[in-house]
Image (cartoon, rainbow, N blue to C red; front, top):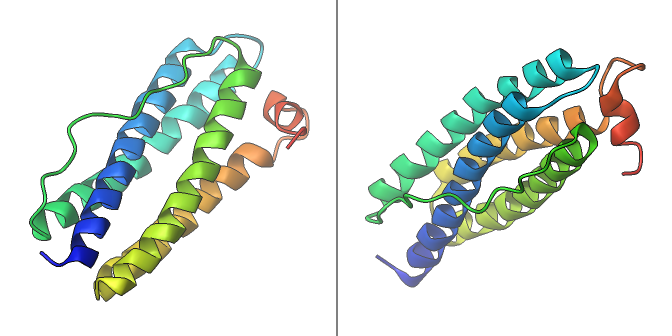
Amino acid sequence: MSRAQKRLVDGLNEDLQAEFQAIIMYRLYASMVTGPYRQELRTFFAAEIPEELNHAQLLADKIAALGGTPAATASPVAVVSDAKAMLEAALAAEIATIGRYVKRRVQAEEAREFGLATDLDTIIADETKHRDGLKHRPEPHSVCARATSIF
């Protein structure tokens, strides 16, 4: 494994841990959310999980294909109890994730993993949609729109 591939695998493992974190976070928040918009937020959080699972699968498969061992742990999850804090934590996680994937895309090109770079473009687009969904909920009455208006 080249030095560029080693850096890439290490970074992909960091990303995999963050995807595991996102899966746990969204499941936890969907289960714990309370208040008048509970069902709406529960549905919103739960809907993010399948895409995060797909990202984790792609990352784990690529890490293994490059000769690495996929991470088996998640990054720490912020456990919060109110809807606004959940939305803020999820938004912060999505913003950080986009930054990591932009960096990883550059590393993929440096390692001459051009197919992975293209896959990362798709993941960046997915995560950007997640971020935008947290920032700009379509329902104007929604607690989501009010809670994220500070961003």
